[in-house]
Length: 201
Image (cartoon, rainbow, N blue to C red; front, side):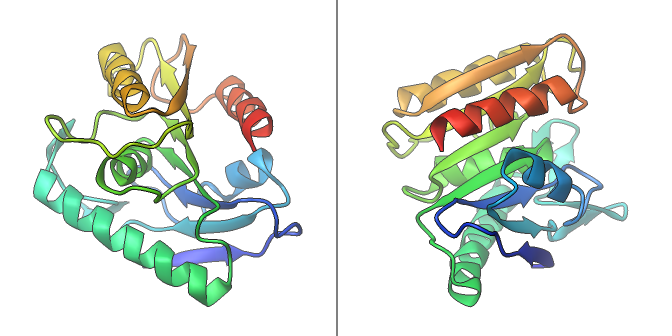
């Protein structure tokens, strides 16, 4: 997978796995990652799918309607990539925090839905419920931050609340942060995620 890797100053810090939104690339969230933890490793990945020239992490059938088969396959590919990257770049595979926005947050959430011990925690900016009717692995005490907008036309309030509940039922310690805007990533949301990260890691 196309990606960039920046070695951190403090190797005891987590490695931040950055996952962009639709139309983004591997460079988009690097400033966000450095804002959250300026001393951590950064592994920022570009999605393998192209939708009308826009990179994504998995196919969709329509806006808000995921191609579940492709989501499962691309999630497996992403997990394999992170496993290999941990060997190549010699970072601790058990100390990876995903930071995803929109489409990237959705595949990060599905990593948690699909695999045990795949992430130490996650920051999910404007995610939806990736899949329904599946058994989610248990991840007791895993910290997860969900950032959501009360006026988000792409991600209804009910999606954020349902994802919160599903992850909490699986044992995660979930913080759901609300702002009154739409789908955009606001500075207030970034600072809330940073404060949450500093408290947990």
